[in-house]
Amino acid sequence: MIKVKHLNEKPTPTDGERIYIDRLWTDGAFTRFVKISEWNQQIAPSYDLWRFHFDPQNWQSFVALYKDELQQREKQQALKALFEKSQNGTITLLYGNGDAQHNCALILKEVLEEMRTQSVAA
Image 1 (cartoon, rainbow, N blue to C red):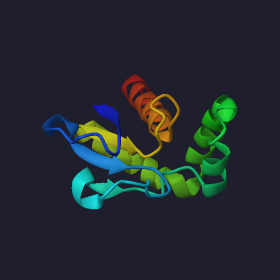
Image 2 (image 1 turned 90 degrees about the vertical axis):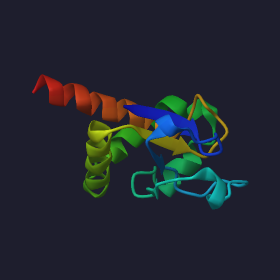
Image 3 (image 1 turned 60 degrees about the vertical axis):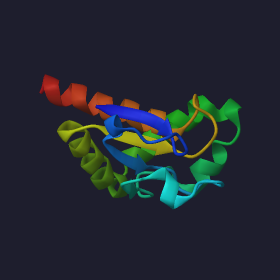
Image 4 (image 1 turned 90 degrees about the horizontal axis):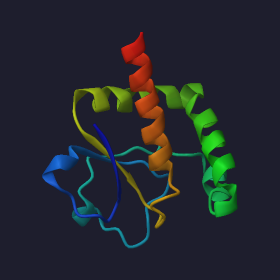
């Protein structure tokens, strides 16, 4: 199972492995309180794409560009590792921006769920 939460949302026992997947650490988050298992910067959008995302009018373009980035060789290993974790238990993808509707964790969850569907169909 794959969940998505803001980094500052209180951890729960059903979160499983909590993985922060943003490029930069968010202001106001203290590592001793957020209880992350891993900070996976490798899977995060590139810095240039991350900066592009700050304009909500770019959201659809951002989604397409991030999905393209996830197909790059250097991100494939991290993506496969996350997929394996999601197959073996619950993972919670944590995002740091304040927008619950527009964040890279939602896109990553969608990609991982598509991978699951493809692996079941194969």
